[in-house]
Length: 198
Image 1 (cartoon, rainbow, N blue to C red):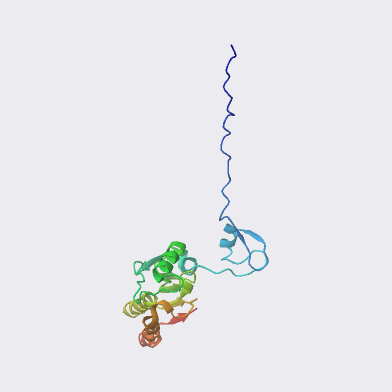
Image 2: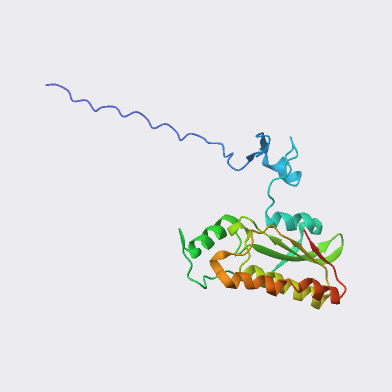
């Protein structure tokens, strides 16, 4: 009688060990050199090979300007809505969700209060990666509130702008923000505090 034999199954190979390097290196847009991200951050986002300036996120900008990178954020929870139910190739709501996921922000501006060269200061920084840094109702409101705080507390105001202009998805509401913000320098001048635009 013939003996039946079981086919041998090959032993499972152990899972391959992978080294996590994603996000540790950056390619310079100018000289195409591969850069260690920590070195790049230590040089304030300037290429260590050619001196090219990378785009600086709003959070990094505040950390660079405030003493020891310490500040208290104001109006963090303000978030855009979709007042016009806007849609082109995709809905405005989808664009907002994507921008929030990519940047960790609710809109295109961060307002912080801290010390700059030892002096109490309020700084607003725009985030270009949030819908092109465009100005909608929330950005206008954040800047207006920052101005009001500066007047009330008699503090200087610094605004670091990198905006793509008015946010078309909010139509006339976006355009009205300029009228809301434009008189600000004069109001700060009345309390004899500087407004510095970067």
